[in-house]
Length: 446
Image (cartoon, rainbow, N blue to C red):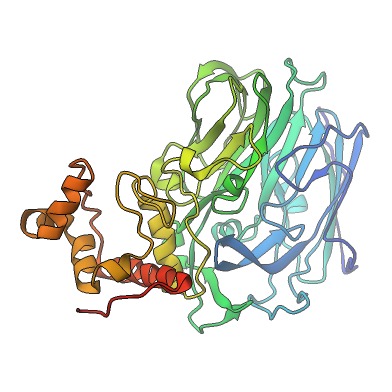
């Protein structure tokens, strides 16, 4: 083991080139082969920028390498990481107004064995820190900003993964390798009503953050991002997933529907092996490498089996098809329509897609319940609001509700316990859908 790294160097030299550089960096879920160089020269500058964490949700984020999650570093035990970072939080991207004040940032590598006071110190905007360390243990390690409040910096997007292979490589051979990083966002509309590209700007909700009540829980930074762009595989292939839950506060129960984890290496270390697992439990900053066989053609749904998290976007696909058919993928947060720009209407869309797509579609035909395209022309607002509020009560008294129950095989709609504000969001979304389609809409209260 190397336990004597050189002291860190702090300077006022501002880097102005690429925000991220290094041959061992991986910018997406698909991982490159290991760079053979024993010294990995890495740059990850910090930036403040606007990212889209869900359709229509433009979030004021803080980043490493100008993306969320930050680029993943791939190396092996014994390699040296030579790291540099310029705090560029005071730079404004072209066409984007400053959404967060410049501030101190730092880097904390869980893969390193170093003095935090020396290497992980906070640096001011315009300053650069450089340090190096040797990788002593294999694993999948988190990196993140360690500047107080650490909770706010991680929740704003400052995290990524370091994949450290054993000296002799992994004991198994695979056909595909992918990185899946789970994280939480705590977003609220900007109090000053600022916009980004015409859509409402969302900022960090500190109250929800402290209460560990996220608005979005996602894989690789985007709600349903790997549903729209599945991870490709072929029948019979062995797939290796490097899975990291960065939190900052929730636990993940990682599961892939339709297969079993043949091997699981907790924290990414093959010494920590488990076999034949259905689900892997990962606390904040825990990780695992999981391997599985894709048994036959199909779409294999990656999901946090803590389904409150899945309902917020922690869903992805490993698929043998380029574009899986939505009709074959039930109740996993598939997009039903484009995204409205109004914040309340967008919230109604997100709620509908989280809770309702197992039974309903928008313009795709009947499922367990009716197709809701054109619903505002078939029902009054008063009827719809009452139905959303208390479907169980309406089934006892309303003739139309009773007829609908009979039409749909006596499968009743469950009471979702929606509040008045949520019902208004659903109604706004239904009206928006029908307005987009040019369908006639019944007047409120008729």
